[in-house]
Length: 196
Ligand code: AMP
Image 1 (cartoon, rainbow, N blue to C red):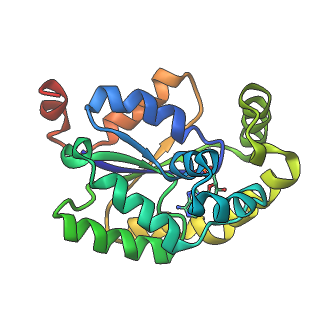
Image 2: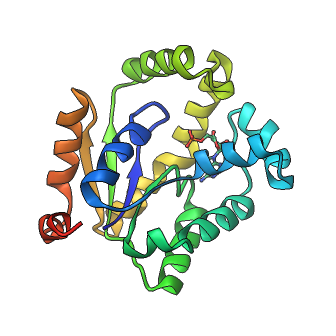
């Protein structure tokens, strides 16, 4: 299964991806996690990305694409992936399409998790308390939501135009939401899951 998860910051993409990777037997590929690991390791790219992430803005398309390309080349991604946090703008949609075409692994579906704004703010506040992410401060969250509305929201329309978008209600218990996502996957996934 080759799947993209879309949705605002705090909509539950990362949490759902953790559940789905077991269900589907494919890795969770989060560009945010890859970037956070690079920042933590102090790599040259991590050093470049740190301030941009802490400001709630988007890291340059080239840096993120390079990291994604490297990650998708790891053997565990040969059977598919759950992509979380990418694409974040229309240029990244284009880059992803080309990359996946080159890998002979075209995307099957994009799933958008829909969660009302008030709940997003509440969830991010909870995560800030639990995980202490540097970009979960109120000011940075506001900027991340602004960037999402301006640059990332059009990504869903892009996949809708390709006939590859399913919108799923992201409100409810974790297993209710993952059940909805699994139900929205293309036919044939059940057999793939059985053999995963
Ligand atoms: P996330 O964990 O997906 O919320 O990402 C955390 C931060 O990493 C974002 O606010 C961006 O600064 C950066 N980031 C993650 N994915 C991307 C991407 N695809 N393009 C640009 N920046 C990204």
